[in-house]
Length: 445
Image (cartoon, rainbow, N blue to C red; front, side, top):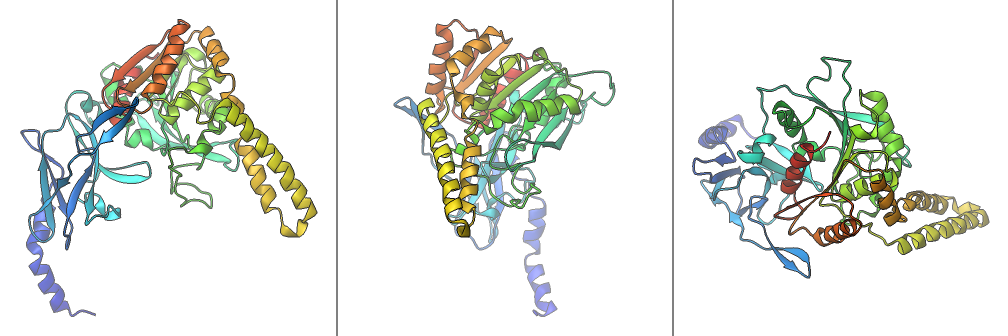
């Protein structure tokens, strides 16, 4: 054990650094709107600021947006442990960032001086808000009434997930007058997200509270479910044996694109919400919206349940399923053939166990709901025959799903189906999705 006198000498030698660290605010928004970042890391050779604080530029190539690489913001050492950099003025918005130390962005790359941490696509980020304009809706406001945000478990019909988790927002007056019933918005995240995505990256609680206080949004219940069928909840919160399993974050994320969530939505989530909360359980008082993959789920839930919701919102939506209808028929056929083969194999060689049969059965179960995506044109016709009050489409001009959305809008226009379109700058970003949510909320109910 090191002698106490050496510990005392060490602490005295670093007292000035520790004292200075206690006074540090990071990020610091300066009077000229520049932003200073300060980071504590001893014995480093190189520290780089990464994330949304970098200016993002896009270049359209064959109608698909690609990000143009930009210069990095390198921090300079103020002493052996404290590093700093000041970057030019940022537009009002919420920004996610992290630090790369000596070429590695590991778990130590969060800002130790900033308590606001969010998770997006399986990675933790430090976050901050530059106030002004729409970004003021993302700020906590202690001078207004607040709604209640909590996590709820509900019974599920998704295979091997008897209970799944959702986030619920109840408006500020919900518990004051128990005779009042409320409309419901079902709000979906995208690929790699979960029930924490909209409250964390989307600042949903702050947006709802601020908009209701300003009279710009009708008080409503908001259900934000976990739409990722890989897991029953955000990583780390599952009571199952897979508690620590990481979410599959590949862009394809095929298991969440086989109709499993869409087919269970009404029976599991809508029925639960109508029984657990004071909803108004009819089409005129239901809205549904989602971003990216959640936009695709929104579209196909609405198309298969045309009398469910009067307000439908697609934010940077994937408007086409990953697989063509022909490919999905082949997948379903292969699953059935594989299951029969596995059954025969297991009966012939029982001493090998039934592991192959279990895998085959799981595959069949995973693709059992592909009919959700069948005959989409006829389903869209039926949806508009039920005359939804609002069909809202929003997309960035540089978004990689822009071409897909343009084709979808052309189909609607050819049939004279009414829709509202909001095209913004930028791409597939939370900055845009928060903007779309603010706009959508002013148009529903």
